[in-house]
Length: 254
Image: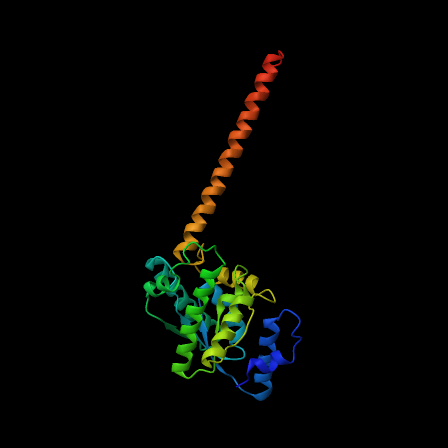
């Protein structure tokens, strides 16, 4: 199989790496050599897997691995798992592809142990990186166990996730453990837009938060702040209207 380091070595090391171009070059090499690698794709949810599968299935045999101990509560985890499974079934039926689905047991305690001490970190910070490491390393280990050629993740399709950090995690896992990582940036080339359109076309449930309890709390905090701001603006507007009316009445112009 092709090692992405071969491609990186030919790119300008002084520039920010475009991981979508790395993926495209690897895909072209596979096609030129007549190979179709087996890829274990970590997926966080059905909507994020839509455009990713559309990109991958043309050049690789894909199995989706649903491993997300970060998701809270369990009802949300089960709902996303079911949506993921149902989407794959519908996608296979419509396209003729043979994407497989594999789900891990729900073990949230492993996530809380991994992020212990990072509970107060902001969204997108150190806690998120640890979460990426946990999920991607588990996917790499499962890839090795099943004898697949590469592991990768749907996470880079989200505009809310830092693809440079995600790919750095994947590269570190490969360098440390020898598991072959497939670098990507699936949000490129309108990847996220495609995912939203496919989500609508397949009538998939799209969750309003990343999944962990911390992002859910942050979402509620934002909503509360937004509501308070709205209320304060309404109060200010009412006060100004009262003051203006009082001024008109004092001037004899009610």
